Image (cartoon, rainbow, N blue to C red):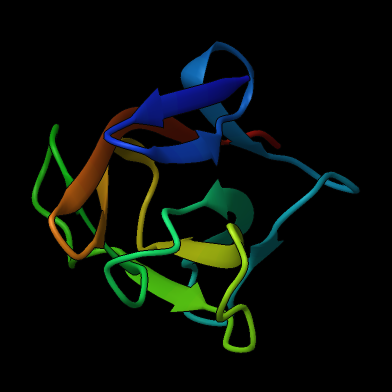
Length: 110
C-alpha cells in the first residue's frame, strides 16, 4: 500500500498494521525495540528527509529513524523505523516544507 501527501510517498504495511512475528520481516532489538524498513519517496527539492514519531495510545519514548545516506539526487529513500514499543504510532516525514504523516499500529505476534 502506498500513501502520498505533499509530494512524498511511503510504502505502508497491509491494513495499517506493522506485524512482527517469528521468521517475518523486521527485527526485535536487544532492548525490545521493533525495527522495520519503510520505502520512502521524497521530493528532490528541500534537502534531507527527517522522520519523527510518537506513540498515541500510551506513553513511550519517541520513534527513532535511520535514513540511509547516498540517495542525493534520487526520489527513493531507504529508511528504517525503530518503534520503542508496540502500540499506535504517528509518524511524520519532513523534507523542507513538505510533510507526510501517517498512523500505524505496531504489534508483536508470538
